[in-house]
Length: 459
Image (cartoon, rainbow, N blue to C red; front, side):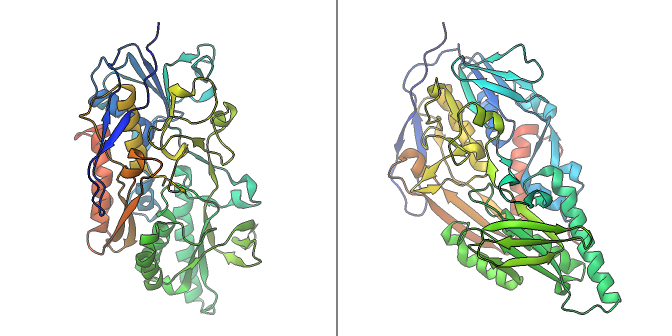
């Protein structure tokens, strides 16, 4: 027989410092067993954070097997992509082969280049494309598939760059180079100065992962155009469907950078449709309030984000397209069979604190995966859980804004815990901080011998 399901891990909280919440200690509720089979769907931050914790922080007897499933065979960090589209590193350098992570994941089986066909929550199995006749059984299922961009609700949006797709990085690079070439050609031919190029960065829906990314893209594009001597010939615009998509404490600093860099921010702009003029190589964005961005040279979009299809087909997603989960445990909180044995971590999880969505970011996903591994492995009170994020938005010229939301108190007390956030303007060392952050996770997964991420310095 299989092991009984663990109850949700309990938490106790030490005294709370208003500036920063104290760590939360997870207490095991019963002795561990070695009979549990764990299947992790997704080899991004959440899934690998869970697998890495099983492999490196828990005893080998805590579970009988850990299997990680992913449709690709590489790992990427979205925060590295801007270095590729701004021509500071090859796109290939933003990916790491997952096979190289095996030495850091002892005891973990990687099943790569295979996709989930279906999840049978009643029978506690998943079916994969590589062996459809051999369903994979599980005692615990950890869902960490991330989200997919779905432009289908907005006509024409699918023609725009998907900022959250690694496969679109080359398009972004080509867009910037084309804008620079056109601006220089216009200047050489003495085209009227008012005939500017436009880079539009549009947020189609919230919540979306890595909330600072659209602003970071605008600031790095600003730096790129300045380095190529065409900034005065290019307009940069960012739109959002809400008044402000970042934590409120970040607003003042970001508004200052937007003003300094002459980036126009359009709040409360719900996109109605997008029209592309292929003959003129331009795109127009129309909003529900009747306003529009006309004739943009390039449009980079944050597509509406949602759970993958196999999650929805299994009845695990809610009407918002995410998997509802408990803030304190990451257990799914819907009525599918055997829901008590299913966890969801990372971007796909629908979590809320104080009535607002929990931010979607790689570091938070890793922390969720870690917490779930300790819950399944029945760790004792020595486990300290922190839900403190660190997201650096590069602002060009080595500067950056560090946004550090802390949801530790919310995990400890989902009903009453309050999040906090620290915002730091790092005018010097911002980029260095980000590269150190990237290096931390590359080191965890690929070791000191792994390939370092080292983009070339700005000339």
